[in-house]
Length: 213
Image (cartoon, rainbow, N blue to C red):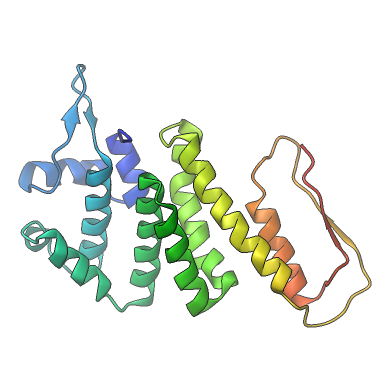
């Protein structure tokens, strides 16, 4: 189980730490533990609760109403949100929750559902990149363990590779491109996505992808 700081919750949920503290005082859905030095820390379950609460609150539900909802009712309301942005944010939250739980099946299922509806390009732009942006700070600070990071990056990488391999270029080109990572950069998801974009638009089998490290 992870132990998240209030700053972690702020980064992952978008809710300011000051607001989280106020919600703790007034409502009951967050009950943080404290270290021996009186610093708050939060469990996986509390992170997931806050993600759900913040989403419902953003799209019209009052905090006082959300606080009284059973978990099943909260999930029902989240599932009924029809706004396009709300759907995207719900997907991002589901990926965060699956990563925290190290639930491979849930993570892959969420990504696959969005790909089937929107295609790989929009999935990366609307869901994967926002997910990586929200979790990247925690990876760098060590507040998410390496196994969680490797789990999700490998699953995303697999989806991109499948998309690259199954894509037929819309037109032919005789030009050759070399895609590479800068020295010291080890994350190749952006490079693979660029490879997919180039192949889907113009360049068929003439692309070389190198990851110089």
